[in-house]
Image (cartoon, rainbow, N blue to C red; front, side, top):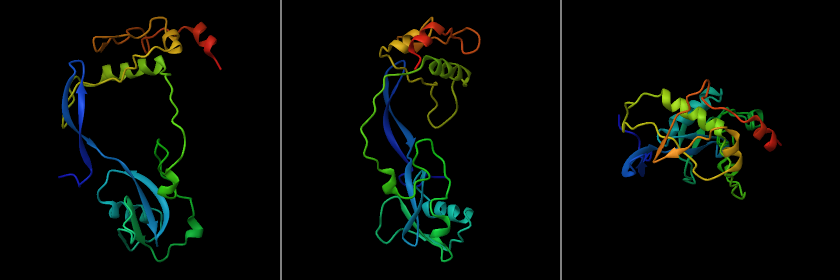
Length: 201
């Protein structure tokens, strides 16, 4: 089955450890505002395509008795307007539950997604999380099947950070594009408790 338009896109990726560059296909994810009678009721994340069906399914599962779904009169992007004559906005205002770790799902309208806030930059990457990721990668199949079968990849922060460097008695190092998986018990790492105490908040 062919993906709907705008459901995927091509990007340039760098493959490690060789450093070769090639095109790869990735799924697109964007917010969808669901309106009833022109008024926004919920926002959820989705891969574009079949938006009317998604909106109808959402409304049906919420007991809103939808009749039809269509593009809104204002032709707003990422928006579907549902016809649900029995809908009472006062009864269900902001009571819908959808979930997404990015915080978009559950908003009442796309306007609520836009936030004016300064970018927060942090160099903190916890070594324990890195060790857990390495153990997971080690357990994955060597060459998983898929559209573009590749070796498991790890995002490795090479910048120096005192907490990350100090927390492990033997820091996890990257050499020539490869990272050795810690071989000790559990996550394979030995945590320096004194260092943790120094950086405790």
